[in-house]
Length: 318
Image 1 (cartoon, rainbow, N blue to C red):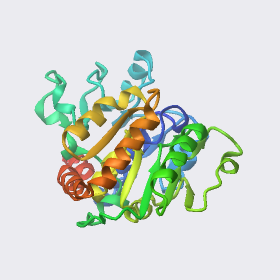
Image 2: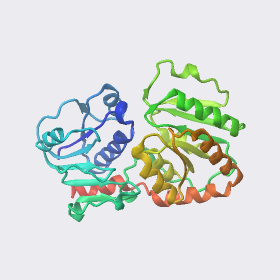
Image 3: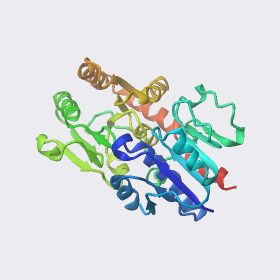
Image 4: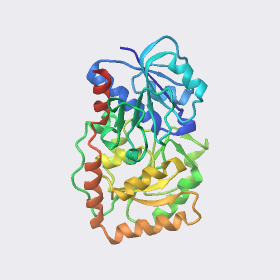
C-alpha cells in the first residue's frame, strides 16, 4: 500500500501540521509495516522529517492509495492536481471548510463536532479528540497521575516559529512571578533571528533548540506556558496543567474549547495590549489556588488517551 503525506512547511505554519502527520505516519509504520513518503517543499521541514526516519521528496509523482493532506495554503488547483495522483484523498481540517476534493476527513480538534461535515459518509470522518494523533514518544508514555502543587519547573514554548521579542516579554514577566522556579524553554526549528540566544541572560533558564524528544522535557514540568496549537494536546495527555497563549487567530476555537473543558487557562491573543497583564494575573491565580492544578491535570488526561493515531490508521487500512 502506497501512502504519502503533504503538509505546510515549518516556516509558514509552525510544527503542528507536520507533527500530526508524523504521528499518523509512525502508526502506519509501527503497526502495519507501511513506510509513508513525505512530499515537502522546504529544507527545514525535509530535514526535520528525515531526522525522524521517514523518506522525503519535493515532487509528487505516480499513484498512491492514500494521500494525507494537511495544509491551509494549497489552492484549489493544487489540490485538484494532488487528487489526480490518488485513489482516496484524506484531509486534515481545523476550520470547518474541507476542500471538495476530500474523500476522507480528519478533524481531531476539541470543537470538531460544531462543524457540518454531513457530506461525508460516517465511516469516512474522524472527528473529536478521540482521534487526535499523538506521536509515539507521547503515546508510549503512561500519563503522569500526580501534579506538584508547588511550582518548581515551568515548561515554555511558542511553537515551531519563535519570536524573540514576544518570548523575552514572557520570560521577563515569569521571572518576576516565579522567582524560585526553573524555566525549560523549547525553541522551534525556525528562529526569526540568527543571534537568538544572545538576547537572553537568565540564571534560572534552560533552552532547548528543536529537541528530538520534547516529551522528556515536558514531563519535568509542574505547569506549562504554551501556544494554542498541537502542544496543548500533548500536555493534556501527559497531565500537565497549562496556560495557553493565542499566537494566531486560527488557534482561538481550540483554546476556547480547552478552557471550557477545564484543561487549560487562557490569557488571550498575544496581540492584546493587555497580554502581559493577563499572563501575570493568570499565573498569580495559579499560585494562590494550587488545588486547581490537579483538577486541570485529571481533565486533560481524560480528554486525550493517546490512541488517536492508531484509531485512524486502523480504519484506513482495513
